[in-house]
Image (cartoon, rainbow, N blue to C red; front, top):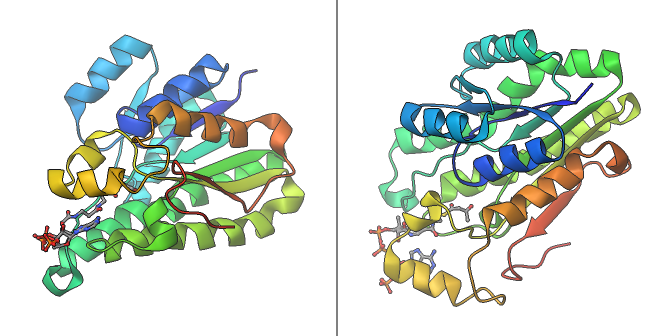
Length: 241
Ligand code: CAA
């Protein structure tokens, strides 16, 4: 039986590339999305990958959404925590809402997505949890104290969860992309983006497909000795061990 993979934020940007790459590698993919029905319907008709609408920032939403996915496709083997938002602002101008919304969607979502399915993975003795961090969780980024905190927190979560489940056939890993050619990065002010691209040794933005390959590698049945790790894919913009 093909493994079942859930990709949050799986209909657009990096998530779309992950959904398509996993499908091409033989997974039964469920693509979650939060709000953009038009994009999700277009994605579903173009890829034939089923879509499931729920808010990853809501525990009830994830519990219900995951139950619907398991009913349709079977037990979840792979979770890709890709859904993420930015609410960029210098902290001295940031509202409490901008802080809380990013922490809820980019960090609390990992608890919400994992808690309902972790016992099933433990019982079956197999699981792959791959979460998308960011270069800005590793190095920090002005204007992103909320996002940098969430994306760094996600790495700590993954290291702890990796230890808890290492004996159960479950790996928990992170991919930390740099600046990738998506709508999220296109929203960065043009002048700022130009200066960012100038700092990337590879000389260009990343491609969503390049991030998807990293995820597929970590999701693979044959990479069970890699856990608690972070794969950095940022065109050489920031090196970390
Ligand atoms: N790199 C270098 N300089 C930056 C910068 C950055 N990422 N962000 C802001 N600056 C600079 C600006 O160029 C400006 O410099 P000057 O005064 O010399 O012109 C100064 O900081 C203040 O910026 P603003 O005038 O724009 O101030 P603001 O309060 O109106 O807005 C901001 C501040 C919200 C941080 C805005 O500049 C911004 O959105 N910056 C981009 C932040 C960023 O990099 N976000 C990443 C989004 S993509 C993503 O998150 C995906 C991922 O994982 C990589």
